[in-house]
Length: 265
Image 1: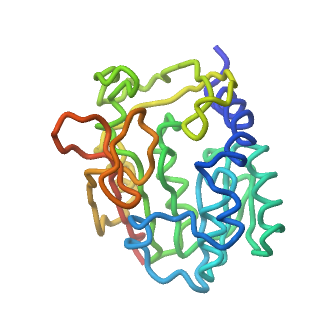
Image 2: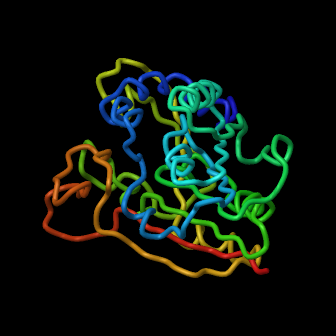
């Protein structure tokens, strides 16, 4: 079988141009000055002005550039060459400087030097990664002593569902093996017409948290949220501004979680 990193690189190279032109990413609004960041991460984060931020799995750079607009010295990393090319062009188009590096997470030491005050990653990231111990080691390597790692992602509970069938279809705990699926379009444009293969993994909360703790990092904050700021799970019900819930079962369950870790000084 072709390795999962190559499978996913092809997937993201294909769908990036669709995302750039989608209503979901609202490129005209972003170029006009709108932030792409959500209230969850804005409430979590400290003042980023003059801070060095490393944004892992940055896609085509909107969040990276949003941090840069707030005064950060921002660097974004993504495995997709199409996404990084787009991010660099977007940085020029809006005249906001940022650095963009093409690399999968596991090869980042070969492609980037230095350490950062803040590392950030969010929404749909670790599902593409097999080895979270190696992920955590990379984060620890690039974080300055006393620096903080901010992590916001979709909760593994909601990742158990088949969004179209509205039923539990995936394990909560990881088997360590990729789940291969054929994708039509993407979460940003279901009608795009593209056909790609994606390889993803499930990770429980402890499988996400413990690798960072094993690196000697200190957990400062952990929260769960009963909504998603994105309408990406099939049929969703809007319950507030940038707040969506999956299904109409009348029960509350976690859609998103966040963690803040600090590297010991």
